[in-house]
Length: 254
Image (spheres, helix red, strand yellow):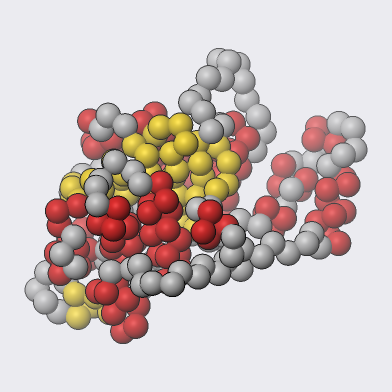
C-alpha cells in the first residue's frame, strides 16, 4: 500500500473537484461521469514523479477524460517549465472531455495535444525525460509504444504504465525488466512513505526454489517469480538505467 503525504495541495483544483464529484466536463459543457481513470493516489504519484524529475519534454499516450494529464500538467506548471505532448486519436469518443478539462484548468500553455497515434508523433521528438502509457493495453501494441518511447527516453528518464492487473501488461513488465536496463522506481518523497511488507511464507518458498540449479530450464518465469511476489502497484514507474546495447543474439526469458 502506497501512502503519499504532502503538506500542500499539489493537484489542480479542477482535478480535485473531479475526484470529489466523480464527474468531468465535455466540450459542450455537459457533465460526464468519471470512470476508467487513474485513482487520486495514482494521480499524486504521477504529479510527484514529474515534480521530482522536472522533465523538459514528456509524453502521454491516451488522454480520455484528462485525469492523468491534469496531474502531470499541474506538476509541469509547478516546475515552471516543460512541454507535455499528449496523443489520442480517439478523443472525440470522449466528447473531447480531456481537452476541455485541460482548458478549464488553465493548463493549455503547458501542453501539445496531438489527435494522432504514437508512431506518428514520437519520431519527431528529439528527447524525452518522462512518459506515461495508458492506451490500448494489448501486449503487442503497448510493446510498440514502449520501444518507440525508449528510443527517445534519456538515461535516468522514467516511463509509467497503468492497469498492471492485466496479464498483458504484467508480461510486458517482465520483458522490460529482463531484457532492457530498467528498474522499478518511485520518487523519493513517495518512496519514503512506502511500508514494504516482509515476504510471505509462500514467496520465501518460491525464492528458495529459484536457487535450485537449472530450475529455470524446468519452470517458467511466472512459476519461479509469481506476480504477487513482485509487489508491483497498479501504476508502475520504470527508470531507464542506460541505453540499449544488447548483443544481437541476446534474449532473456520473461
